[in-house]
Amino acid sequence: MTSHDLDSHKLHYHPERVAAWLSGFVVGPITIELSVTTACNQRCSFCGFDYRRSPHAMTGKQLSSLAVELAKGMPLRRLRAVSLAGEGEPTLVDLEEFVTLVTGANIRVGMMTNGMSRSFLKYVDRLSWIRFSVNAAKEDTYGLLHGVKGSTLNTVLETISEVAAKKDRGYTVGVQTVLLPENFLETYTLANILGKMDVDYYIVKPFTHHPQSANDTAVSDDYYQSHVERLAEHFSTLKGPMRAIIRRNAFSTLFGKRTPRGCPAASFFHFVSANGGVYSCNSDVGIDACCIGNVFADPWQTIIKDQRRKKILTAYDSRDCSKCRLACRLYAANEYLLRLRNPSPHDSFI
Image (cartoon, rainbow, N blue to C red; front, side):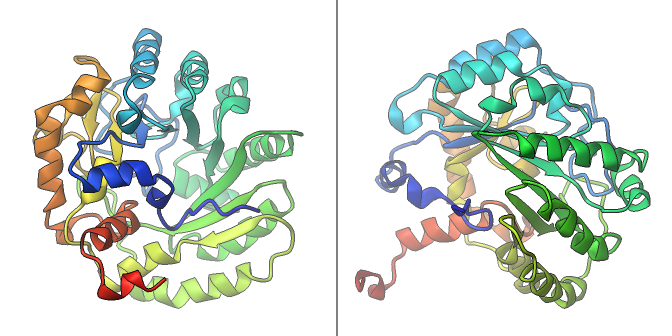
C-alpha cells in the first residue's frame, strides 16, 4: 500500500509552489481545514475546541458561494485540498452540494468524523479519504472519553466496516486514536478489531494541550516513552493489509520538547472557522490579531492576496514557537522549509 505520509509532511510533492515561496512570491495555501460548524454530538474529554462552543454553522448558501470562490485563482494560489474537520462535527451540516462543487473543480476533499451521523454516506464516494475518531475498544471507556452512551461504539464500528467494505471505492478509510492513560491497553484490541475489516490504516497519536482549551489530561512524557515502543512491538505482529501507524515524529517532539525557529509553513496551510474567520494556525482560532480575513466578508482570492495576510505570515515566519502547541502538524514542514533556507554544505552530495 502506498504511504500517506501521515507522520511527516508533503511539501516536497509541491516543488513549484515551494520554489515560488523561496523566491519571495506570496503563495496560496495548498490545504485548508474547513470547520463548517461549532456544534458536536459528542463531548470528548480531550477536545481542543471546547472553547469554541458558541453556536455557528455555515449555511448551504454560504457553502455554495465558498465552493465557487475556492476554485478560483492562478496555479500558485489555487487551493488543492479541503479537510472537513475543525471546531465541531462536520456531518451535522449537509455537505453534499459543497463536496460535489469542490471536487468538480478538481479540489480534493477529506473528512474527519466521529462516525455517529451517517449523513456522509450520500457523498462518501466523492471523498479522497475519511478518517474516524475512535478512542476506545470497550463501551465504558468509549462513553467516558467521547461523552456519549458507550453503546455508540458498536454503531460507529458497524459504520466503519460498511464504508470500508464498499467495493471499488475510490477513497481510503482510516481510524485515529489519541493515546491516553484510559485507553492504552485498548489500542491493542482496537487494532485487532480494525485489522479484520477493510480499513486502510489505524493511527495512534499523542494528546497535546490546545493553549486555549480547558481540557488537559496532563499526560506525562514518561508515560508516552514507556508505552510507545510496546505499542510498536504489538503493531508489528498484526497480520493483514491494514497499516498500524504510531506517529513517532509527533511523539518525539514531545519527548525532546523540540520546536522550530519560526513557522514558515503557515503560508501553505490555513484554517477556516465556522464563523468564516481564516487563520494560519488552529491554536490561534478566535484571536483577532491572528485572523487573516473572513470568507463571508471578502472573496477568497482577495483574502489570500491581502496585505494583512502577508503581514501576519511574516510574523509567523519569525515566530518564537517555544510556546506553541507541541506535536504541531506543521512541525515536519517547518523543518523542511527551514533547511531549504539554510542548507548544509553537504546537501549538494546526492
